[in-house]
Every structure is written in structure tokens, then in C-alpha cells.
Image (cartoon, rainbow, N blue to C red; front, side):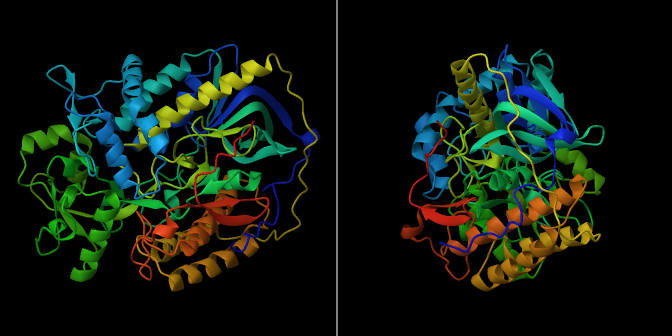
Length: 553
């Protein structure tokens, strides 16, 4: 049992229900990525659905997904192979039953997207398939060459806007989940036009995405600040495996520029990784070379950068057909040209960056969390699919599958309850009496992201983690007790809470497994083939030998 996290109060803001506007819906979905919108599409009339998005609905990690969606569509491929690849990547922490269910459902979900108007790339009239790291077969469907997420979200958003029972609030920040008598009842939501509002719902789905912005180097857009993880924790839902952040091996590294993801499909099509001296180093580290799982490639790049004392390595595509590469990866081609680089000829500087949050809110096969009334899907959740390392292109798939399952589960609950009149429970939050002095949030945020990259990044050790814990605890003592009145402050508070959880998990796991690498414990330990669960209240962090299935009745 580790020391509990010190949260000064249940809600980030004080509120009196008599002073706020109230809104009522059957289902509240927080987040507008592929998981949230797929869930919304699965809940039919007469049930009312309200989707709340932090920014515009098209702004999500799903929108920026380049690679594609993994699924067994080739007759030469088999479900058993996709399952085996996923289990191997997960390094002993996947739930085999969940993996089997998701993999077998993949062709159905891909077909569903096609039925909704998604245009996947084709070859000779058939959906084109490519291979990525960790996969034993070419099974990745893709769109617009290297902009699969954009095309999938275009089709899904179009479908959502055609449904009469679905409303979307854009640019609305969810401050906290409302809970009463051990059940989630809705959320406190803020936007510039309405100010704070209370949204009451019979069912709430968290689909808020990831937390890559906790790191200085990341592929994630600015919205990925771990808000859903933090508000679920404050509400008392169980989280697990928060030490597992996946780092994508190949992020375009141009000093002073925004970091851009360079899809794994580049290596799937035959790109090499070379160091500053031109040496192709991946065969030195793994028998699958550039097609090794992401955690192995990221560690190899980090080690090679250290050996060569250079801030990057280089992707080499010069040996591949130039016309095909430009046609296959048009977005990356345009991006590189913007930096006066020819991707078919010039070495492209890359280094790893925080990419996908594997840890999250614990859910069962039907996407229920441990908090009654609350479901979760997508990157904010921990479903048992990814284990200690996510297999490439399994993320959009997970969002689609568990979004659909959440919709089915929520619909069953609503129909079992029958016509139901929402009542306002006596929830009230006392205003904070903490510090009201202005804070330089940009400075705190930059410092946190640098600290997380330095001490809780690809490689970790006890000393660095302890120093990170002390520093984050210090920031928390004055930031968490502060009263803020807009999203910038609430986001900072959420980021600090999630950082605490990630550091606590990394300290507890005294081994190296998947994306979690400890220099002081360099090997996997069979006794640590288990999850680390965290819950508040009661404020507790404890190892559990199997995924918990303590789900809402």
C-alpha cells in the first residue's frame, strides 16, 4: 500500500445548484473522438444524448491518427494471429478474453464504417492492407494515405449530426463528474456563453482521450491533458496501470518546431532507421528490426541517441520507390517539404514522443467502470486490451468496439429502468478557501512537462522518480488548493493529479515491462505480472493480481 494522494477537495469549483442553470439528458457523453461518437450513434431514440467536447468536435486524438485500424480481412490472415500479436506486444498484462472479443469484432466495425461512408484506400477494388510493427500480417486498413483518423472522423461526425436524438455542445469544458450516494449523476460543465452548468444524466460515458501533453515531447494535440483520468479519480472510480505511457518511436524532430507524428506505416513499407553515422541499428537490437513492437523501437532509438551523442536518429526511405511513397504518404510528404526535406531522398530526423496513454479508468467488457452510472471507452479507459504496450493500430479499433459496447450496455440499463424522471439530488460544493494569488500557469506547465520527460519518460529509476514525486507534490500543495475560474487553471490541476498517479505507479512497479523501463530494475519480474489499481476515495493505491471486475449493478 502506497501513501494516498493528497486532494484538498472533491470538486475543483464551489457551486450552489440554486445559482446555476440545469440541463437534463438521458445519456451524457464527455468527449467527441471515435469512442464517444460511436457510442452516441449506438443509442437510438427515444433516448436523448448530449455530447460535450472540450474544443470543436473535430479536434481529438482520433482525428490525428495516421496509421489505420487493425482487422483480419485477408483470407491468408487469421484471428488467432492478430490475437497472438496483441498478446505478445502486451508483455503479459493483456486480458486474453478482451483481446479475443475485440479482435473478432474488428471486421464488423470496419464494415460499419464503410457503410457510414468512410472511404478506405483500395487496390484493384479491394480495401488496401498494410503492415505495421508487431503485426505478423498486413492487416491495417488506412485512408487518405496517412490520414485515416481524419477520414474516419469525417464520416462518423456526419452520421452523428444526422441523428435527431443527439446534441453536441462544443467548446465546453467538463470540470467534474457529479456524484451522489455512490453513483455518477452527471457533470459540472463550463463554457464562455453559459458559464458553469449542471448536466444531469441517467448514464455518463467518459471518452476524453489521452494525456500526452504531460510530456515535453508528444504527438498529441493540445487538448490531450488527462482531464478524464483526473475527474474520474476525484469521483471515486478505479484507475489502473497509470505507469504505462506509450512512446511512439518516430516523431519528426526539428528544433523549435511543433512535433509531428510520422506513422509506423513508413517502417511497415520498408523505411530504415539509421543513426547519425548512417548505421542501420535496429537489427542490433531486435530480430524484427524496424518492425519490432513500439516499446522496443523507442528504447533502441534512445540508446542509439545516447551512444552517438546526437538528439535524433533518421528515417531513411531513399531505397524505396519515390512515386509510391509520395502517393502512399501525401500528408507526411507535404509536412517534410515544409521543412525543405524530400522524404524520398533526405534522411528525416526523428526521436520518440509520448503518444498513447495505456493506463486509465478500469472497465469491464461492457465498458462499465467501478462507479455506478459511469462508463468509459477509448484512450481514457483501461480495458485489458493493450496490457503493458499497445499494438499499432489497435487504438481506433478499441474506441469503436468499446464505444459500441458502452452504447449497448447503457441502452439495456435505460430500457430496464423504463420511463424515468430525472431528479436533482442535494449536491453542493463548498467554495475553496485556498490561495487566490495569481499563478504563472504557463511556467508551471512547461516545468511539469520537462520534468515528466526527464524523469518519467522512456527510461526511469528510483532516484529520478522520487525527485519527480517531491516536485509534483510541491506544486500540488499550492496549485490544487487554488481557486480558478477558467479551463487553463482546471487543466493544470488535472495534469498535476494525473502526473501524481503516473509517478506513483512507476515507483511501485519495480521491474521493466512493456513501455515501463526501470534502469534499476532492467528485467521483467514474474511476480509483477499484475495491475496496479488506484482509487479515491478511499485514497488508496494497491496491486491487484487480476483485472478487477467490480462493476456497477
